[in-house]
Image (cartoon, rainbow, N blue to C red; front, side, top):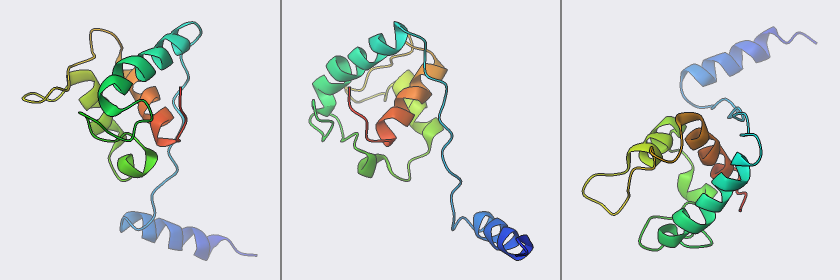
Length: 112
């Protein structure tokens, strides 16, 4: 079977924004850092976003709520907070790669 037309169709759909590429998994932090980040996610993020991440003072962090939101934008919100809101910057406690890993983790529906 000739995969040329299929490849061209997918490329055209991607160019039009009708198909999104699969999200590549960022490298997981080494232990014990991964466990520390999951504890931060559960305790600190969960304090405002709800222990089930369905919302509270902060917005929901469920895969459905995060769907369509750019990963880089979500990671920037984690790192820089949202001025004028209760969302604090977490940059003093984690780096960009760790924030991206947490975004990926949340979008996959995993829970600490």
